[in-house]
Image 1 (tube, rainbow, N blue to C red):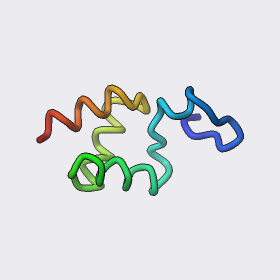
Image 2: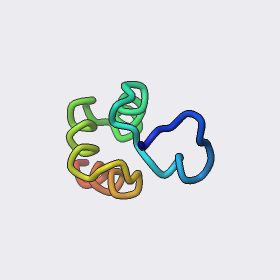
Image 3: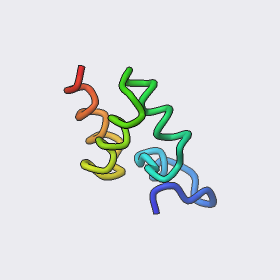
Length: 60
């Protein structure tokens, strides 16, 4: 699970929890994209934050 609230730390910060609306919203706002685009990126690239960030940067 990408966002287990009982497990905090570096490993959890490397993941984007697609099931948490606040994380998708934050990711979208951070990259200046729509929440739908953010969700598509997370679905396509998985919860790996680095891969998702790189994909979002390519949209700009």
